[in-house]
Image (cartoon, rainbow, N blue to C red; front, side, top):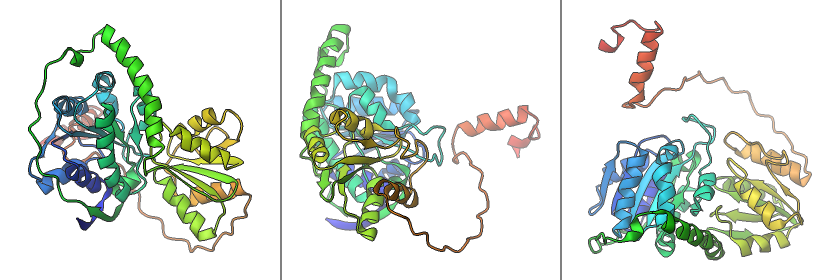
Length: 380
């Protein structure tokens, strides 16, 4: 084991390598791109890596490997999940033999995306478990755990880092790469063909698995209750780190519920958390996924505050300042504003398409057609 300073995306790649991944596929898209780039740069033996034509193809490549019993990973951004959703929905019914992780990097803000989709909603839609890391170190650890859960339940598993986790850097304790295991072998079976009768049976099975997963997540190390006063805060993803910093800096007496697996929410631990508080403020990016599950589990017995009550914004990336303001308002504290010197405004940087992106030609063609460029612009 060695300590290595790496980005969150690098940590995910190194975590998968340490967990014995054999096939990695993906389609580039910020903030996920560096995951595949890390595999290409590291050249770990026994791992096959490829950029695919699109996210749908990438997911099917990883699914084929998982059918044969190999651990596989597919990477994309949240918008790319729309492209991959068709085979993924059927894959949720069919299941996998080898562990399979679907890494979908969400982009609150958004910094470089067309939408602010929340992949945790898609996990609920597809009845698939999702891990939500709060830091590069946790992203590394969750990658190995996600493979184990995938093989234990025979389901693909979502790993959902956000931009702040993907591109932050931290010191990660990297384990040695596992030695190559036996070669995967595909075994023919009617189970791989999702006909209507099988679909009916599989749907019932994955619904039952949701309860079993919830029970399993009660004991997983990424979920925990940090006991304090009767005011409760539930936090998922990078928001947990903001809350921890605020609690430490201002010595706040609150009970903090760290949610590392926002779907399905661990039932027993959630009930324990709710029994120890008088009310809950939910801090999560972007949609009220944890908030809505807390509302269902509490059955109106405890006030659950968040987006639906106007205590937290629906859109945009959260920050330390935004979270502090919300927490102070929830606790009835007066915020002492510090005198901060006014900084010069940074020059505006218009968004650009990534170098090599095939969509560039489409935008150039549209601009030429509109008379914005000289017709020979592309020849220069």
